[in-house]
Amino acid sequence: MDEATANKNRLQRKLLWAVLGINFSFFVIESTTGFFSKSMGLVADSLDMLADAIVYGLSLWAVGAVASRKKRVSVFSGYFQLILAALGFFEICRRLLVAEEAPDYRFMIFVSCFSLIANSICLYLLKKARSEEAHMKASMIFTSNDVIINMGVILAGVLVLITHSKYPDLIIGAAVFLIVVKGAIKILKLS
Image (cartoon, rainbow, N blue to C red; front, side):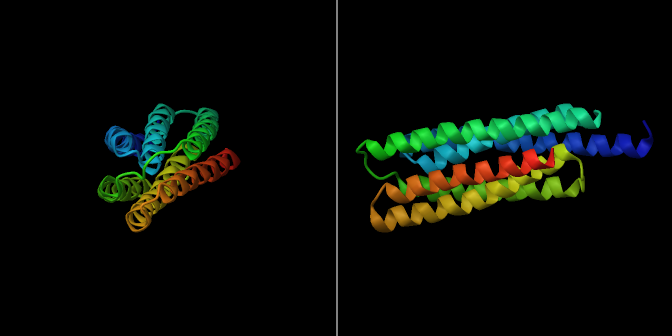
């Protein structure tokens, strides 16, 4: 392996470790606050953060590997996201059928603002790698989706505040999982 490739691999590993740590931390924060605030939007985003952390871990495994391993990582990541989305849609349907109060909009907005900042940092770090490899492109797709999702959860929090209804939260939860499906399909096409 030449010096330039070794440096590129080191940079990719460093960036992936950073975004993995950020995403796993926000998975813990969002899942905890989502549970206590009864927010499907936060729970959906937390599961997406967990999936992203797993994908970043797999991408770490692919750094410096042959192209076929990188493509396998991307394929696994895409299917993993599809499974996550299916589970999320099931939970949304369950919550539609159960009478429950509106989630706590304050947690939705506050936590999502910090999550938006964290995902923006992750996207910036990943773009620094300037990689065209499938595993790195998959990582950027996931993170770009997360930025959009965070803005959606903030909007849903504002709508819950205005309407005092659980439906804006469930709608954003469903939208999160649709974005996850779209990203998974895009990744599978890349692979």
